[in-house]
Length: 445
Image (cartoon, rainbow, N blue to C red):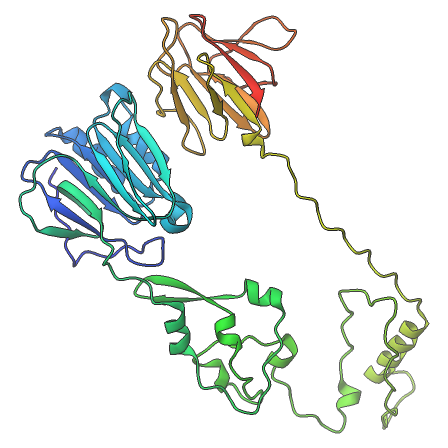
């Protein structure tokens, strides 16, 4: 497989922070470490001359693949056949707000620069890999330990390249600021017009997306709400800026005519009941001249008058009860309410599925999030022996087709052999026997 080099003419990827995702890499003379970059994720893996391994790593460049999919590709042949690699990804697509995820196996190291410090992630002394989420990350560099063909760093937006190191390019074009976009689209305010009244809840929820060079900037409603109220008799104010107005003032009203009262439609019913002490109804205008009338047709004015009388005779509705402020809940989410006690006395939170075994792997293990891998030592323990997860608020254990099976012992019950591959719910206090005197226990957090 031939690996090309991505230059500045490559199609840019829109980064998760609103700017461009760009990288700078040092070209490697030997084709040993392959970097595959895409928006919000970069994988650096040692492939040597193995063409099958190269194709496997290159497939991870699919932007639609999740981090879980990438790990399944790398561990498809078992953990023992996984070579050294470093996977760096934006957590939930946002590095600055949600953190930077780093997974390292083998000789690679990742240096992450944060607002306060520099964090170095490596897998020294770890049999599987090191996984860490770093908050307030600003930039990162992946070092392979190999030599570079030149001192010049080459740009890479997305694609694959042979590298000795690669880092995030902080000088890539960034998103246009909110103030700049607001100033560019805001017209001069119309003088001698009061500002429109906008509910605070509308200001908090209303946003406008302005796309500039494939970047997205959320423009707050406050930036445009200070413009003067435009004239309501035309449509010119609709061009060049978005003006937040009330429903009544935003509608274009027709000029009033002499018979507007007779042709007025019935007023819509209010969606919120009136308070108990409502203000006195305003004085009704004089009845309009009806003109020709056959005595059988009900005009709009008749309907309005009938509704007014019915409303005046109806008893005032009860004021809705004032809801009390909800108390802060101290109940933990279901996934954080349970803990798995390990044989060495350690405690593993069930915030994500847990895979236990002699050499646990994520291959062929369904999970909505990245599972925790726990290594156990014992003659009766299979490579991937057991899966423990919280599903729908209940702890569920699944024997992953182990060689010697798994027994669960509920409080006050005899041991029960799990069916291979069949999820089985258990309760707090249940003991799990994997053989070789390795016992696990389900407890509350």
